[in-house]
Length: 189
Picture 1 (cartoon, rainbow, N blue to C red):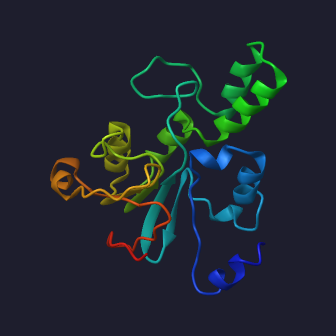
Picture 2: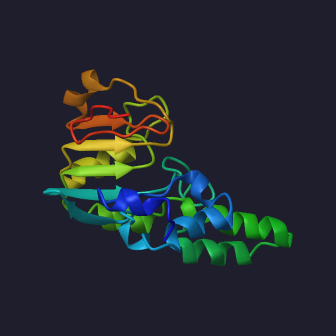
């Protein structure tokens, strides 16, 4: 485990979801999923943390995999995506890049399995519909799991969504670039 993380781990727990840039290079993906904290990924599961049931959905909606509202690709998981790639001729470099980038996509299997769970808070990379570039599918997932709050990243902003909360049926919070947010949605740093 990285020596930089040791002092932090002595003071708090670290949990994470992956984002779209975490698969830009194999080393980035390995830093998350090949390190001593790989078991702290919230993606696709619900974990009780400090008395709260937290659900995680990492990644982004991607057209070659699943972009809600677009054509059905028939791809349900990463294995399906690899089979889909194998059916099309690609240059080796392009194939490797597509394979790597697709690791951080949201797959229907992960989304719908998570929708069968119950959680207090949904932590996701994609934003709910109250964000200008958000998705109603995130709203639907939050409501399906009974989340009272959604915390998202991806857009690196912290917009004020309070007026949308009654219509959404949950609180929504965006975490700005390199920010840390408290459980109540306030920005710590």
